[in-house]
Image 1 (cartoon, rainbow, N blue to C red):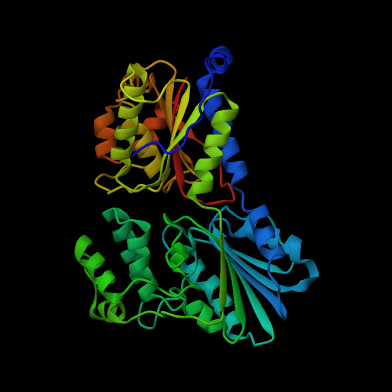
Image 2 (tube, rainbow, N blue to C red; image 1 turned 120 degrees about the horizontal axis):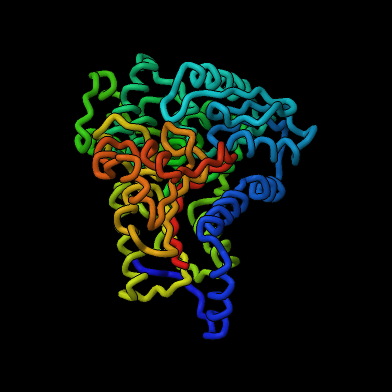
Amino acid sequence: MAACRGELRSPAANSNNQRRMNMQNIHKDAQFMIKGIIRDNMPGTAVENALRAHNFRGNIHMVAIGKAAWTMAKASCGFLGDRMNRGIVITKYEHSMGNLEKCDIYEAGHPVTDENTIIATRECVKLAEGLTENDELLFLVSGGGSALFEQPLEGITLDDVQSITGRLLASGADIVEMNMIRKRLSAVKAGRFARLAAPAKVFAIILSDVLGDRPDSIASGPAVPDNSTAEDAAKVVEKYGLKLTSLQRKYLEEETPKSLDNVEIVITGSVRTLCESAAKAAAKLGYTPFVLTTTMNCEAAEAGRLLAAIAADTRAGRNSFKAPCAIIAGGETVVTLKGKGRGGRNQEMALAAAKGIHGLKDTLLFALGSDGTDGPTNAAGGITDGNTLTKLRAANIDIDKALANNDSHNALKAADGLIITGPTGTNVNDVAVILCR
């Protein structure tokens, strides 16, 4: 990965920055950045801008799915007012923030579909199937929608969906690979929901949590033609050694919709805007920002070790980065589960970096999930510095054993290294930042 953005500063400006930063605490800087990153990526303004540019025809109905569904729906309700007939919102447990006028709000399971998902999706299907050419469906989509929006195909059970999802999560499959399988077992993914709404028009506003902003992979593309093929799905099955029933294999061999004529989509927000927000916040604090990549996609622990090596080289003057600097990497890593601990990809990344930055002064790394929930925990991510390894040793925690057991959450908790934000109302991938003051 190579640096792709920075700012040239004069010696006098750098001197002033250094004096200012000597009075700062690097952990306070990290907290300032985290708050700014989340604030800048709330979807409300982007949703309103998309609605303002769209010419609605007919009666307006709304379905919102995903971790950011409530926030996107709130912005839409405020903008549309009395023009909206009815809305249905499906989001993750504890991600709803109150009632919305004319909306039925459901909370359901994530990252694994549960019974409430099926119940809520059934209501959306009823709404879609009742629409006519005089109606228009506003469809608000955000990350997490693959688990939160589901009606299995005939013969596929909830247990089937849960089992396959769980196996894919544990295998280290990335989001595109996971959704390639899940959409082929669903009656609402891969453009099938938009077909149910025909002849009504569908206007989809999509908040991207997929690298490259592939609309057919975001929430498994309920209103988007599928670009993947049955052959692609077969390769995923073989790659991860998935054991499937004959019926499941039959559905995977069938092609998904490749065209739709009743859909218009707009993509708002992505990991690129997440990294831009991190760079803006860093610059306000006097750091020179560099964006390494917006497509980080590898094992979380390996990403942590790589970023720690970059931090160590920066401190030793072995690369082109000069303190004070903020080195930024966006994307979505994966964790191949081998242990029985608790954690998430961002916590694992931060913990894996602790060895490499041990003893480094005024050096810190944080890894943040923009939705506020990292894996099956209440943390949004993790933060480590030059003293983290010392704290872990004092707590009798072996960092290598913790990583082998995928127990980053408990290790970071002992070292006061958890980032806790609560559900944020947005979801545009993850960002990791090295701060060298």
